[in-house]
Length: 567
Image 1 (cartoon, rainbow, N blue to C red):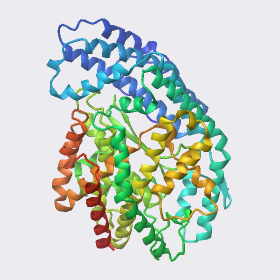
Image 2 (cartoon, rainbow, N blue to C red):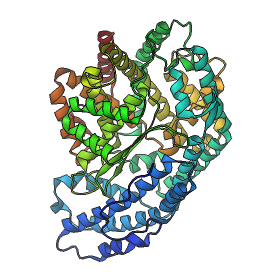
Image 3 (spheres, rainbow, N blue to C red):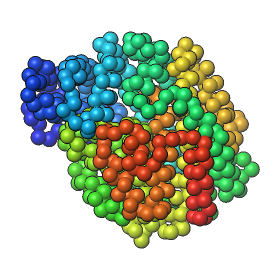
Image 4 (cartoon, rainbow, N blue to C red):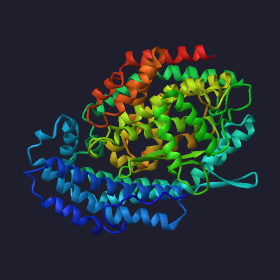
């Protein structure tokens, strides 16, 4: 698969050369600002939309086939030949704008300008080549992990295809596939450690160049985290340990009893505990799209139409295949005003959940593309994930076949219970991932030793993840950080999922009272884009931006009550 070229280009471009864009940025640097400042800003915004879509296309194409040298080279061309000069040109224009009176730009630019000032202050010329090297190392991680595959019953399967077999009833098959996957990861342990060590050194230098004591401080600035601190994250971890970890242990215990096992093992965590056949909601991409369209038609016909546009314009790549990068994502194409969804579907209920999740991101993108400038479309990641996780919950009542979905009522109840249990289990795991990175970037010398990383990960696992017996597989447990893409590719981008889950659960709670009103409120909040602070965005969606023990206790009770009702 390949995406269509950038449409309606305002001038001819060569995506391998910065000179294509340089003249336009130079003109903006020297243009008089004593007249139409808003018009100048829109012209800059349109240029940025074009450059950012160029980069998004290069990344998407590279992840669609990690074995294609031409796609890899196109991505490297962007990160090496375009992105560094784009960062410099964008910085020059930020400095020029921020030297002007900006009151006339209005309240809708208040928060975007705050982010812009922060980013301009954080910029260092010396960091441009370092960020380029980090992007290239991220591509190396994708190549290594996307290329992992093993022979299985006469055919070659990648990690996503092997992972889909963990729902099999036969416990011996599950153990065999899990061991196969762990052996694949172990075969690249040295390579992954080497990539991470290079990343750590570069990231620490980025922080030092910016005059900050460590990369944690740098990242909190780089992510525009104005509304919470590292200590707030640590308190969130503590609240999860107190309120959610016991509930997650109860979820594991329900699973153990449902499977009739003496002990849960790592290969027992995906199989359905029901004696009924495993949930196999669809067979290929077209069925997933049609079922999703039907569900979204019940949630809100306007949302269904947005997904239909993506299908019509070939902006969905949902099935797994050899050479495809791992994971799933929604990427924005801001010039044409469209999102793109990438998945590794294999016909499981997890894939349905991923589709609902990524569609939430896509709907958010559609709502924000109408905003006048690209900076107003820059939504805090913590709220981006409210859009995706909230959609999982808003769509949940419509999973049944009588709504055009995938399941009988009994199967839909099973699917919803699985999802709610997964939330209870996810929040402690999120705390492990986030706490691990707090340790890594405040102990940069120790973190250069992979054995120290293993020990820290394992200690955090013991603190938060209780209920699964890893006896005999301690090495696999300790190296679990290798298997979390975000730790390599997007450092510190994980607590957002936890915060957003708290927000999304409040959206879901509102929907239990009044589904139609909750959906309308949700969409209105999405339309704000990045023009409000995080607490204001949560409030607009009908949620509170807080993560204390009372809040988590209320939401845990809601989840467990809902599970009891569904049972």
